[in-house]
Length: 117
Image 1 (cartoon, rainbow, N blue to C red):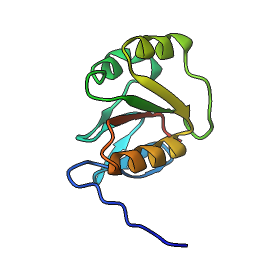
Image 2: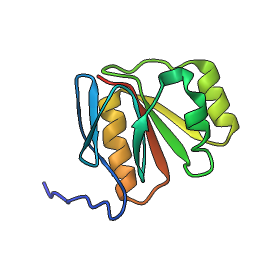
Image 3: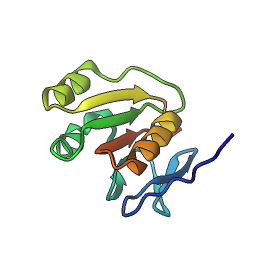
Image 4: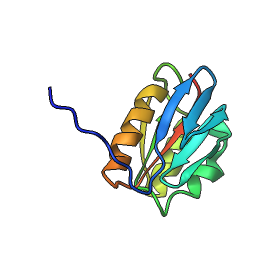
């Protein structure tokens, strides 16, 4: 198997995660976080639509991590984001972190809003 090292140039990847925290760009954040190419901030969860709405002009898709297991997100949240023209992909938080990093390394306009595992 051939391995290719991922480079992020100016972007900030998700370095790791664990029970109740995420490490982004070397900084540890506890609880849910929203991550873009420029960094991360605490996210208020599914009820914090305003933070995700603010990303609409800068991202094409938001990966929503639902914790340790995949789960449905509130239908209104999905509908409101899609109405803004933002794609929504729901998956477990570990999968959302990995997918975000891969697409970020490709220079794609992505964000991840992830609940802790």
